[in-house]
Length: 147
Image (cartoon, rainbow, N blue to C red):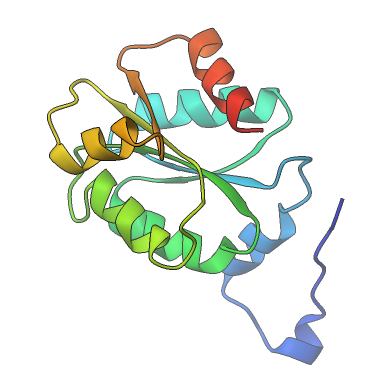
């Protein structure tokens, strides 16, 4: 397992956010980026992942997810994203990340599957889809299939 440590005197003062992200990159599977605009579901997912040995970073929308990913892209192993979110939706988030890391696994979570790009990602087996609402067992099975 790689653990990244930074000497802030050598690299300069990092933002609190970046430092927090970097200091948590010790989980056995790397980082799972979770993006959902529903706070209770976002926290349920993060808590479930952490309870099962995964490291999760959470975002309330696609724009925040892109910012978090930019600070942890080397360690990100999975994206879990809602399809419909403000600012940047899930498929746009995924497309932007895939333009740099085209093989990063994705699990879409949504109450509907009416977004054409998301359906295409699932149809071509580039992503998985879980219909909301879902339980911890169904979600963890999808995550385990990635790892």
